[in-house]
Length: 136
Figure (cartoon, rainbow, N blue to C red):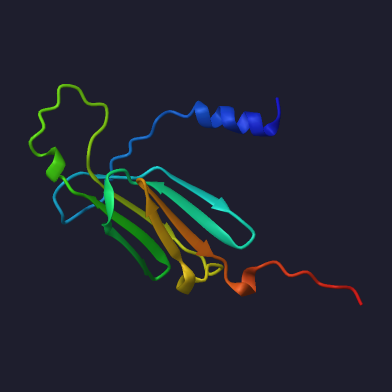
């Protein structure tokens, strides 16, 4: 069994984690921790976050003191007159915080929301990119 297969098996065998946000909020309603993947490329970190049901105008992304916070609110209006017979998921707002290191060029962070998936691209600062040194 290869290392990659072992890692996939480990991930598949993980027990589901509680996803409801336990921090304090001043806005009523449930908050959830969105499922998130972070991948590294040579030039950036790419954060992919599931926020189904959220509109672009309801996403607030802030960066303060190296803390990147994503706050995404759901419009509950479509759910107000529904009387669910059976449900498998809850509807609520999303929140997530990350500490951003000094290798990120915070002035060039890019955000894109499409089909319930928020993609943040955090470019690496030029000084942190690998440099090839030529032998003379």
